[in-house]
Length: 170
Ligand code: RP5
Image (cartoon, rainbow, N blue to C red; front, side, top):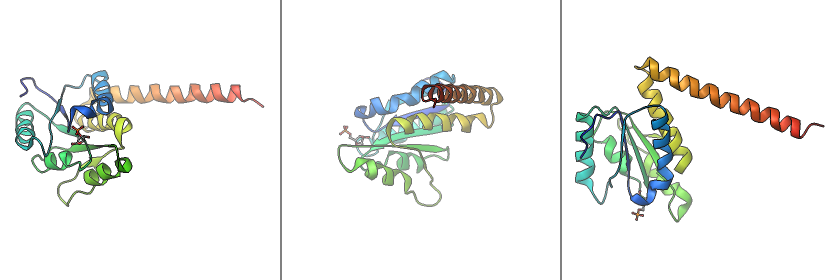
């Protein structure tokens, strides 16, 4: 299923999740982190999910990111099959405001953690940052890139602060 070496594997439960998960890819690309991004379902394609975990591990995968909505078991199913860190992105469906997916993702039994981030696009972005930080523990060059990106975010906040305080200057 994958022929290239990868650091991070992003799985989502359905193609319908794509728009909410793709910001994760943008950040991994910005940080030059190799990845695979594909669809696999804990329920509809359990064998494919297991095969992906095995094959991606064989190709060097170090972190798995799993996004799913409704009875969001994908991250848990992957966590059951790997000792690599698993990050879960709960996706909000048409009902229940995503609370179903949030609880399904976060409430894992002892020994099989899923590092659960925020819902939807905000979670997708932080899943990428968290995966990068995990990889950066043993990668000083990547760590420097993360620090540089944080400096840029800091500068943006400071510039926004200046702009707002000037605009509303009493
Ligand atoms: C989950 O069910 C998927 O992750 C998606 O969020 C939700 C609905 O999937 P579709 O019916 O749109 O394929 O497994």
